Amino acid sequence: MATFRLKTAEELRESITSKTQKDILKLYDELYKQIAKEINKAGDNLTKERLVMLQRTIKSRIETINSAVQSEIVSASNSVCEEVVANKKDWLRQYGLKETDLEYAFAYVPNRVVQTIAAGTIYQEGWRLSSAIWGVDKKVQDAIDRIVSIGTAQGKSTYDIAKDIEKYVQPGARKASRTISSWRYDENGKKIRDVFRFGRVDYNAQRLARTMISHAYQQAFETVNRNDPFVEYYIWHTSNFHGRVCDICRARDGQKFKKDELPLDHPNGMCTFEAYSPYTMKEIAQKIGAWYESPAGTYPEIDLFARDFGYRSR
Image (cartoon, helix red, strand yellow):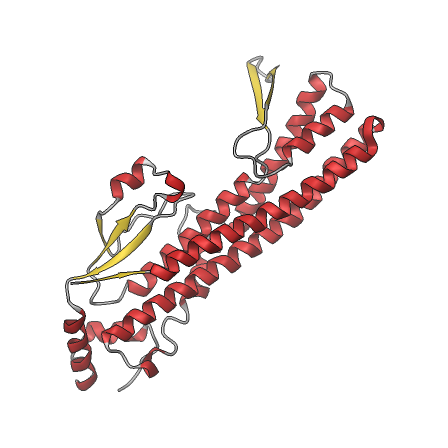
């Protein structure tokens, strides 16, 4: 038997996810510093008009941030896919495939996977990366609007409301720095308690980035192995990323999945996968050698697989 695991691709996914998160954090941290500077410059003289302008400024800057976040996600996902392809090509060399036949192997995979992820083909109908980014933007705007409305209802000064906004746009907090709450009534007279947590403005963008990069990794893994006739099934490996394992992943750890039945890792997931072959590498190499020496059609499954890396003739 032989097993194929994306060792360097797994390592790259972790490092590039970490880098992407730091880049996103930096974008939001710059926003925080800019907003804090403007608020402190105005001081107690901050008027309602200036507060409205502050909200508009934040909205504009968040839109710019989200555009950069989308570019970061696409670039990181593409890099992870390229490393998956490089790992698979290293494995195919052990199969005994000729270097000249592997030059363009799976060259189409990174672009196809990234397009699939961005278009939301693997998700529910109507989902797109661009719309998800827009959703992050909307959540931030809704949160700021709530801070203003709650602060106004509580009789806070314009400056104090602005300082609450400043606390909200401060990114990277592991937990909320503090919570504000108030009571209000909806149009039907039902009492509603508003609760707002500060210090997590970057969370949704970070979560989206981690999820998309991991899903790109998984989709690339499945694509390069889908037609490999020597791969029988996949084995799920729980990541234990940062020491946290959910019940779903804990139950899947070590489980075998048919090649067309591997479940999509959940949002924020960082699990990994292994391709299992019942053949030894020596047996695979012997079959590949026989395939090279035989007429087309003798080994139809290998013929099909060879198309994935551009092989056309002997």
